[in-house]
Amino acid sequence: MNFQWYPGHMTKAKRAMQEDIRLIDVVIELVDARIPISSKNPDIDTLANNKSRIILLNKSDMADPEFLTDWIQYYENEGYLALAVNAKQKSGLKQVNALIQKACQEKIERDRKRGILNRPVRAMIVGIPNVGKSTFINSFAGRACTKTGNKPGVTKGKQWIRLNKQVELLDTPGILWPKFEDQTVGQHLAFIGSIKDELIQSTELALDLIEFLATFYPGVLADNYSLTEEKPKVEILRQLAENRGCIQKGNEPDYDKAAFMLLDDFRNARLGRITIERPAKNGG
Image (cartoon, rainbow, N blue to C red; front, side, top):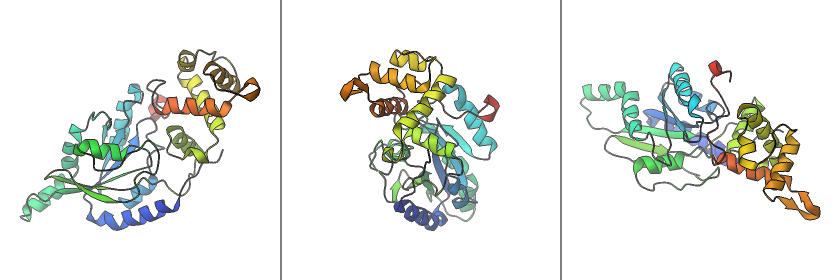
């Protein structure tokens, strides 16, 4: 399956970000803690060159806790300040302000020496679609500043948000990059819902997810769907369809409906805390 989604508004959004970056002191990039590599846009590195950088591993409540610390260490080794957060539950958000001040310490010190006091730090919030940027901003600000939705493409334009006397945030639309060199990246993005479902082959994607879960999280499918895992993945999806009443005319399994059910259960952590990508030292 070939994964790609780069609509016109993303090109426009990227161009706007290139213009706005000169106003920015620090770039805060949200990634999905379940796929911390695939959900990181490589174009941001070029865009944010010479800017202070913070990586927030969002949706950490959905990720396998065994790998969270390793991923934070991974990004710190890469030169970022990193933190695991759960924007929906506001977990970890109290530490973000301190992280912003730390990232901009040199800039704040330069301002102080020039006699510029109390100028707020300007932070740009970036990330791919459906990574939780709007939820993060609303939770961080303590009020509804942006429109949120559990689907990609909700934020269409930029907006400045004054958080407090110390920080101003520039929200930006979620953008992907024009071409995935590695289709595994596209697969992982489709797993978490960052590529529109209308553009994917749901049954094929669900079979890929079944293969991953049976290999790295044995027992999860059996426990959640009362099925036998020691079978070909198509047979596992058939069992899932039958056990959950996904039946169409002629008493045949509705594989499409069962596929979307499985994907939805994974995306909303109903199968438990699952991490798709593991740091290299854990064999990822």
